[in-house]
Length: 424
Image (cartoon, rainbow, N blue to C red):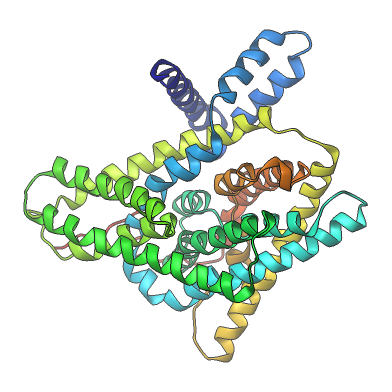
């Protein structure tokens, strides 16, 4: 088993390195977008050449079939990716935007899940395709949360103003917990459990609040241990243990592991932020989590491109996928506009842009992982294909064109996402 895992890891890292080099050197594209594009093109080439050269295609399928994508993302990489994303946030900008982040990550996510579900069911009926209300609800729940990995990578690349970075990054980090609880509750209902809206709301409160509380409680002793030694390597190991151990404990206790990871990272930053550099290795921590985040992003986007070989592109799924590109983005515009209208009515200025906030709500590997976690008995097979089509469009089109929406916006001179404020 260890030998197989070593081979898989070697292949993934090797492909990520090679395609990352080609993206930077040849295509002049952002590394993550370039690696996903090149991997998808290579996967397509293998599939098209399979009748003439079956051996490479068959070998690629054998390698990929050994990867449990859902487990790898939800119970592996997500812990470090979320912790890194939250740890590198601009805390002051996030504090200033806490109201709009709260509205987007909770109210807008729930409204989006309901609206996408209803419109998806209407599309299913319009195109005379097979799809039940339960399937549409599950799809609405898994596609509504914006993906923190894709959003954070895009934000670091396009140099958005501080307040927009805080809004998009904060929303993407916190709405995962809400979306995951909705998805799990709906999946339980599909299995026969009797759930009321009040019960779902209570579940969101308990699991979400429990995850946040657990993250803060675990960060407190870790910060004490970090300040008691003067060692960069020990500081890094302690933060790494918090990221992995906290996520595992949250899953063990049945609370929201994504929210625990975010809360733990933010709380650790708050606890160690004021400490001088002779007590905390601020610069070393920043470099470690930045590099680890970028490496994991590259590997994750290679995995997304490789999924092209594993996804069955049925006609129904492709049609719905193209329809969902329109549906999901229209719902995103409507929910964001509702939040901004509410803020304007209550005279709470947020200085944001509807276009940027709407177009910047990317979907990514998290949605695919949730789609793959649905048992075959509860879906006709279109959800995975539809989700993949939408995710590819979101990352390659929305992610690569985000800079166009920012050309007329004056960038802020303050630190951006990924820059830790260091004490003087």
